[in-house]
Image 1 (cartoon, rainbow, N blue to C red):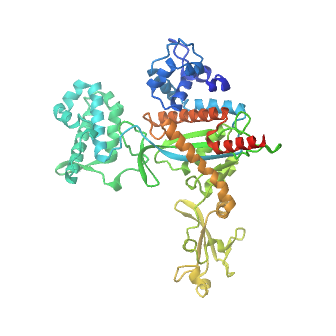
Image 2 (image 1 turned 90 degrees about the vertical axis):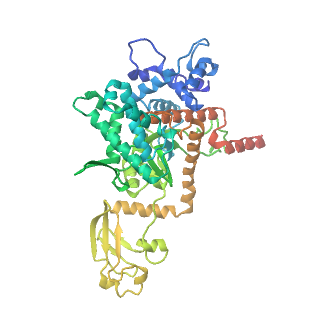
Length: 544
C-alpha cells in the first residue's frame, strides 16, 4: 500500500507492450503482474501463494488498484508472464523502471559511492557425478523419445531391458560401492548412449528426432565424457580421463539445466550460477551541516541504500571478468559512481586503469602484493628498492648501479618489461645475497607497462595506509545485502531452469529488496542504519 501511495503506478502496461500483443483475448495487465511478482519475491512466495494473495488480500488489491471483488488470476499466469519477459529480452525492465522513478525523486544518482560483491547460486537441479550424469542424461533422452515417437522407439531399442535399467531416476537408488562395478556401469551407459545416437541418426529414422533438445543434450554429454576407438576387435567405448575432459565453462552439469556449471569459490563446490549485486553506499552525515542538528532518517533524512545493478553468470565466470560488464550496466542506467568498492577478486592493474579511463570511476580495492622472494620474505631488496627511469628505459639499484638490458616481453599472455643488470656488476656486490638468488647471473626485474605499473604501485602504497583501510571498510556492508537477499528472497537457490530465467528471478528479487528498504525508510526505520536512527532519536529527545 505504501508503494502505491509513494510511487503511484510504478509499472505501466505501456512499458511491457512489446511482449504483449494487442490482438487476442484480453489478459491480465502486465504492469500488475510485474508488481505481483515483485511482492511475491518480497515475501518469498510460490506462484500459487502469490495468486492467492492477489485474490484475497486487501493490501495487495489496493497496491494493484483492483476492486475488492476482483476474482484474481490463476497461478499459471505468472509463469507465462515470466516466459514472455525472457523471450522478449525484458529481464531488466522492472529494475530499470524502479531506478528511473527513484532518480526522478533524487533517491539514487550518478557519482557518490557504490559497492559490489558476488555469491554462489545453486541451480534448481541435483548435483550429479559423472556416472549419474550419464545415466540421467540417457534416461531423459529416452523419456523424451517415448513421448515424441513411442512406436519408433519400441523398434529401435530393447524397451523392456532399457525400461528396467533407465526407468528409475538415478537418485532413487544407490550405485555399486565397488569401483570396478561403477566403471563397468559407466561403460554400459556409454555403449547404450552411442547405440541410441546411432539409431536416431540412422537414414530411416525421422529427421526431426535428432532436433529434440534432450537428444542434443545426450549427444553433447557423450561427446564430453566418452570416446570410441576402432580396433581389430571392433568398436571400443571408453570414458574420458579427468585430464581429457573439456573445460568447466563448456561442460554440462545437468541434462535439465544446460546453463548450470560446476563452480568453485573459496574451497566450496556447487552446481549453478553466480550473482553480482551492486548497491549505493554513500556515506551520509547524521547531523545536518547547516544547523548542526541530528537528522532522523525518514522522508527528509538520507535515502536508503538501493541495489543499482544485478548480474547473473554461470558458476565458472570469475569476478574480474564481470568488472567491466557491471560498469557498462551502470553506465546504461546513468548511475556510474565516482568510487566503486570491490574486493580483490574484481581488480587488476589493467582494470583499475581501464575503468578509470573508460568510465571515470575510481576502483577502491586491494591489489595483490609484490610476490617476489624478497617481498615475501620481508628482507632484502624488492622491486620498490629500485628507481625506474621510464624515459631513459633504465633502472637503478639501491647501490647506484644501472641496468644494461630493457626489453618488452610477453609473460603468461600479458605484456611485460624485463630489466636485467650485468652479471659482472652484480657478482662482486657485497649485498648480492639480499638482492638475487641467482648464483651466476645478475638481478632481473619484471614490470608491467608504465601506466599499469604506476597504477599498481600507487594502489599498493595506498592500501598500506590506515586511513585507506578504514575507508575500505565500507565495502563490507554489501555482505549484509547478500545475506538479506538470501534470507528474504531465497536467492541462494534458483527457482527456475536456465540462466535467463534465473537472472529474471534475481532482478525481481533486487526490486523487492529495494522496495523493502524504501518502505522502512518511509517509516523512519532504515534497515542499514538502525543504531544511528536510535541514537538520533535519543539526541533529539535530550535536546528537547
